[in-house]
Image (cartoon, rainbow, N blue to C red; front, top):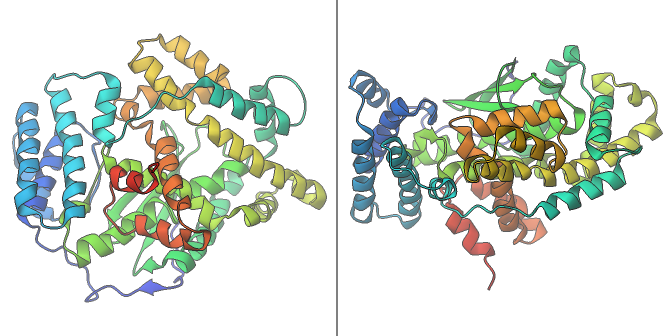
Length: 432
């Protein structure tokens, strides 16, 4: 589904036609390192819209040994102090290179404990959360959900009431994309020429994915292996499109690459600190395009567009929508259980069946969804990545909420334009 309607506050491109500037030596070597490492770790490069000649060069080379890639990363880090004047840019490149060096080292056989590996990839210590935190979220769901019996069963029954029919899903997605785009454009502006397409896919371990192609354009895939529910789809769309991944990538391309010539921003790398920031801001996005005071109204309109039976009963629909907002808040608090499950599997060495049971019992996931979550945790790339959603959102929520309420959209907007590290964000919210 391609959108062609112009939106508000589109910022003209400098010079009209986009041309990729020549990279400085540090950016050039950063791009080459990442492209070469992607040959050894397929999927590390999540998107590339930099100079085509660098990609062509790497494509014609023999694969570099992992130890050499590790040494290349370390050598480039040493050059930053001399060759990069801007302190914020230098700090951003440094933590990115630490992550690439760690991944190359692991590839070279230099194993580290799981949590140490994850910490070096994301430049932040990631916690094992107490199960009491999840029990409290489940107690809140127990209080909110109608009926009696196990929370997982009642949550599954609740979701079935709001499952979007397959033949309505494409239209719902198109409507939500435009709605999120209009609101994000008003709050944060839209770079000239940005656009995206939405496709429905199957057979993936994730629920949604943004593929940014450069030129301000993305393809967003929505996975339909599991049913899509009204309470989830608003957040998913905001996460992948506006003001989430698509808008972030489009603005950073326009600002960092095209205007400032920071070519290191023309490659998107999995399992690096930029992912923690990116997933955190994408999770926060629904707060701005569907704020708490409007979320129930948006869900009621969604029920009607989806043809859900409850839409014919306005009073019941209003009650359900308001309850769905509260249920959504409580179940998102359960989402961090996936990080604990990854620790159990990869750090503690617990058996797969035990981890699956943990997701069902502590995370209150129905069996089919627990299995899908475990599929993500077991994946070679995502086994490290699993932490970035909950921990990225927690970090950036503290950062945004440290500003006065009226200033929060502007603070969030900085995430769409600047090279920020987890340390820079954390320093603002650190105690004392």
